[in-house]
Length: 389
Ligand code: NAD
Ligand code: MG
Image (tube, rainbow, N blue to C red; front, side, top):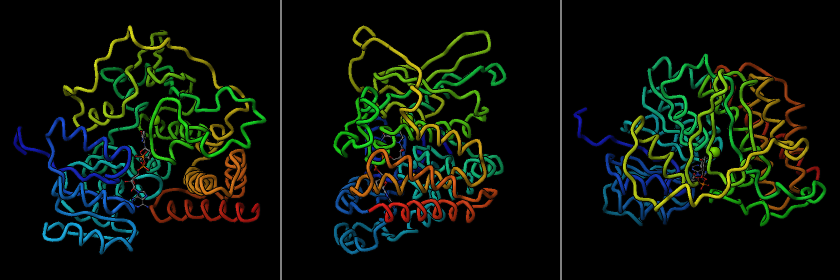
């Protein structure tokens, strides 16, 4: 490719929080031709984006929205794919040089798998891909010489802190966590917390699944698994500290006691930009920012017993094999159960734990095994939910 030629990018989950912020970054900075845009069911938003960005194709997960989408972009020459496997199909067959995966949950697995299998770099927001299949995706990336570039703010921070450093000199990675909206609630009140309270994240504005995961701290648990695979650091060297204002995005402690951290106001467009243009930083005008205006930077240890989901993620990672895929399926089902009013907040961790404890762990060395472990976790959790109410 010539020096100044645009790269072709496929944006999976283009209508979501990460997807729209990615398009905003590309709008500001250019550098990419968008060849693929996808969404789950929001056909109007996808049609608007398609007419603006003129990709070669669009994909919509919900097959019942195919005709509306087709009619809305009629005459544009843009191909339309629809259905559960549409994202996987375009990831496998369409032309692009970088995959931005902003899908939520297991829906993101196959686009990650196909992009890396084709030797295409992956800018990854969909942490679930690594939770489900970290070992497999790493081995594919190694074989095809492709890169996984983190979009998640904590992992973008760690990647930046590790630039020019030796991994053997790392004492530990410290992921920061806001602590969610229930950080100071009395423990007995958290069990019955409402959906509105759980969706009220103190610092970040994100999609509903990750927002609930942030309230239980399962999000941080998934991020520990993500960090383990991205940086190939043993689990004992990955720690979490509560940092409510989310200014320090994460840090690395080195063996001599020196710490490096990456800081900034919470805005996902910064880690998105860094993943798109890695290893460079491009000039962006987000706002005037000055450390003098930042709130005091406080840190605390995770309080025992407050966030059982975090312990479950550590447990699944130490079990290994298909345990983390089961954790993912169970978490998606439990979060959906909570959001549609069938589970209490406190029952999210309880159902996931029962599911994890019931699972017969197997090797997670092929994609079918991984998908079926995820489905088993999801189905078993759904059965537990129906037994409850
Ligand atoms: P979101 O719910 O806002 O967006 C998800 C996108 O995926 C939407 O475009 C939706 O239409 C699409 N989608 C959902 N289900 C689908 C399906 N079954 N098939 C096809 N498409 C489907 O979610 P988000 O907050 O943007 O999060 C996306 C990913 O990025 C998640 O893995 C999340 O953990 C991660 N992440 C998000 C943030 C953030 O600030 N939002 C930060 C860090 C990491
Ligand atoms: Mg994060």
